Structure formats: C-alpha cells, structure tokens
Length: 284
Ligand SMILES: C[S@@+](CC[C@H](N)C(=O)[O-])C[C@H]1O[C@@H](n2cnc3c(N)ncnc32)[C@H](O)[C@@H]1O
Image 1 (cartoon, rainbow, N blue to C red):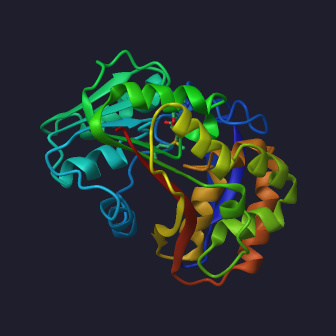
Image 2: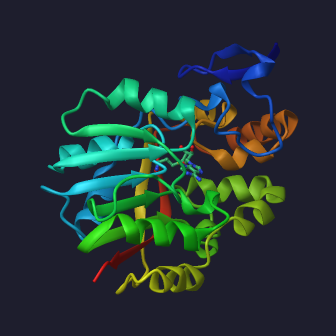
C-alpha cells in the first residue's frame, strides 16, 4: 500500500491509500489488460463539441456502426443516442470491455465484441460507419486498421479516425489546454507523446492504400471535461484516469507533477480542451 495526497474542494488535505497492485506498471506505459485499467475510460459522457465535430462529417442516424477501440463505451452510447440502428463496440481489453458492457450493454442495438481492432472477425460490408477514436496512437500497424475498416464498411460507408497528431499534442499550454501544462512540467513525456502520435500524411496514405477516399484531415478543439475545481482535476491526474501517457511516469514523478500543477493552476472551475485531428474517409 502506498499513500498519496489530494485536497477536497475546501482545501483540506485528504490522504488516499492505493494498493500497489493498482499501479503495477507505473513508469512502463499502460497495460490495458490489467484489471486496474477497467474503469480508466468509463464514467464519461460525450461532449457536445464531439457530437458537433462528428455530425459535421457524417449522420449516424439509422446507421450500423462499429466503434473500434471503444474503451468504456462513451461513444458507443453517444452514437446510440444519435439514432444509430446498431452500435458494436470492439476492444481488445477484457476488463475495459466488461465495464463498457456493464454500463451500456442494456441499450437497444448495442453490443460489445472482444477482438483486436485490426482483425475483428465481424462480417464483411456490415457497417455504414466505423469510428476509431483515440485508438491509432496505440496501434503499431495503422495500415492494418485501415484495411480492416475498409473490409467492414459497405460501399458509401465512412471511416472516421480521430486522434491527436504531434502538432495537436504540442499546442502551447493555456487556461483550457491543460495537457500542455503536463508536457511543460514533465518534459520527459514529450518524446513518448510525440513518438506515439500518428503522422497526418502517413495515415492519409494508409487510408488511401486501403481503398478509402476523400480523407482530408481537419482539426477541432474538443472539450474533454468540466472540472468543478482544481483538486478534482488533480485527483484524475494522480490516479492516471483516462490518461495513458501518465503511465510513463514513475509514482514519484507523478507526485511531483501533481504538486507542480497545483502551484501553476488557479483554484477555480477548469474547462479542459484538447486539439484533435479527424480523418473521414469514404468507401467508394
Ligand atoms: C485511449 S482508449 C480510447 C477509448 C475510446 N475510444 C475513447 O475515445 O474514449 C484506447 C482503447 O483502445 C483499446 N485498444 C488498444 N489497442 C487495441 C487493439 N489493438 N485492438 C482493439 N482495442 C485496442 C484499449 O483497450 C482502450 O480501451
């Protein structure tokens, strides 16, 4: 058991205890298969800024949708709520998928499927829309993802890839771009973060090689979260929740980062925004 500290909204110090087993690979990157990862992408709702960016590209109403690397199912639910006929969430992590199923599996037309995103085993030409949000930076073979999405799509269907490029993640820190502060305060993360990010041109080429057309990348600022105060934001940082990058910090480095962020950020409600790139490609 290790101890770390946070603060409640009134500034009182809280002592939090966490079993060491909950952070077994601290400093070595995230292990999606570890049961401690089950809730890291759950409990969130899609922000209206995401809905606006997606529906500017494609109308999910009536569509059969596959969400590759669906995580906790946030966007599975959002696509269901936008009127999709069916939504199949695919993820390779058993604990993450079980949590997604527990949270959203009761929704009509929604199902979850355990598989690698590059080899889903789902039927050919069974989807009108394939979404891959925040997935490709975890994949070594992006061409394989493009080929699998092309196989799944019906003619006229659309693949939407959403991820952050090196240019997105290196946007300067600001009152809303809180990730910028993480990289400024823990610069050892920069090569990891930039190194895992997709190159916009290379991804475009992979999509075209898979026979998908018309994918002009476009950038959007999406609201990630409304944090009621600085301490709620810092609690998420301290637990690495939904932030795989922070699994590349040791526990001591993470404690230092939380301390430095507390010094730097105002103690007030924080609206966190990230810049993303979206590619929408069509199967002819
Ligand atoms: C950063 S999370 C994104 C979750 C969700 N799409 C979102 O935007 O909130 C990445 C997800 O991809 C899954 N994943 C990573 N590699 C995968 C692969 N090769 N095949 C399927 N899922 C994968 C992880 O288990 C994790 O749930």
